[in-house]
Length: 311
Image (cartoon, rainbow, N blue to C red; front, top):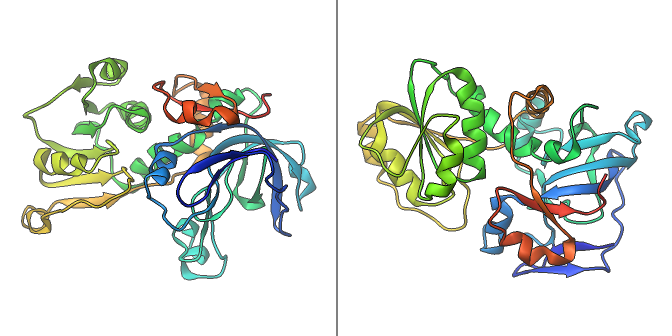
């Protein structure tokens, strides 16, 4: 099987990978499209130092075998985190926080940068018939953006800042502007910021302060900026994940009673519905062959991915 394998140090293209064999509770999926996330790039920098295996966690595919025959032949996307099923987190609907979870393409589980992958069947979501596979590929990152209004109240009368001008920031702006709130998007690249004009006010810097700041820069400097522009008793939502550490003066946040909320994976069902109804319009990805993964990883397009077995 063809795929992109991370050996603990670097990514390599291989054509000798074994066909994945599903467990009794897993389905096997033929991958048609796979998307590159910034997290995949951070893995190459050491974000997941213990991981070795096939990379990737954003995919569209078709189920070829399953313990539930109703899934066979269905076009699907799938969630990342497979828990143990018995711990307090799994029993209370928080499987993504299971201490023993496996995370596709990142932790103990091969991902989707290959021709086939296996996934726990209960993590699958069927793609609506009217939604293209290329648009459905953005379900996972859009779901991550939708986690924010699940975690914090979005006041339409409140001022909100988004730090970052990349893909994740764009997805977050696509969701939050639907609430009618006034958005300010703070970035470093004028050409990228121009894409945000439909959502709010894109700026390179600001002297304003905000009740809610969403940090989605993908850089350690983002948290420092968030601390400067959030109001006292305000809230910072952290979306960035990256290799390395950052120093934080926690007494500043304590004295100013600032809430810091970590945020990652979100709900797939609402993401699929927003895409199906056209309420969120996202640029399509540029696709590469698996063997051209280095070019794909260095792509400057809005989104890059792999057309492995295009529909």
